Image 1: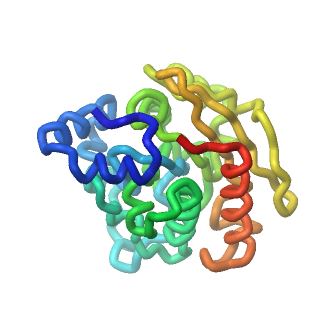
Image 2 (image 1 turned 45 degrees about the vertical axis):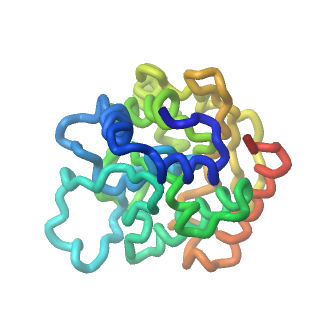
Image 3 (image 1 turned 135 degrees about the vertical axis):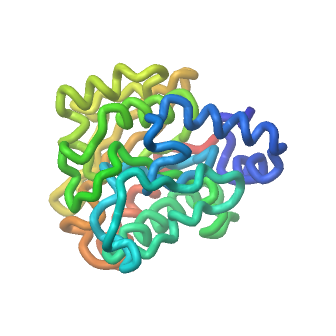
Length: 262
């Protein structure tokens, strides 16, 4: 079994030294409940088998590499979660720089807790999940799958046990009655009242919405609804853009102030 609340450095070491038979058991547990058409692992969801931070989005988006611009299939699968190595999906070269921003955010969060880790090591203890697999340029309700909403909620609440969860563009989706019900009714759900954040942090006319959610083991997890989707105002442009870097820095400073260290 993986230690549930290790710091990122300890998680990385444990992942790298885990015996192969234990890895197989963990892979089976992580994919349990996943709709069969998405096995062995859903497209657009690169992850560590034991992530410290998990980003949750609506779908893989509509800015594919040139080689994938024709013939995309929603039942394409990814390599399963990794054990001590950065998942290659984090380095996907999409046309809007989405994954560059995801990496910079995950690296910033992990480095706040474990300053000794480099980017590749930080990504090796990071995850990215989606609530649907459709290609859409907006986080619209129609791109999500209620079965995946329940599966993601269960993964976060009782299987992966991350300490930090960051949501992109999901506020309007998860506050809808049917989606909220799918999230909360999942076996082992991560309990979050999506309608009532515990606090808000103003940011460029938007806000970080923050919750202290409870996992099924009784431990807390910091949940943040990001001010807006990375491809939307005020985050247009590259991951090197001033506003994106400012948002990452502000959130990491919040983590320091709140003491989210193990």
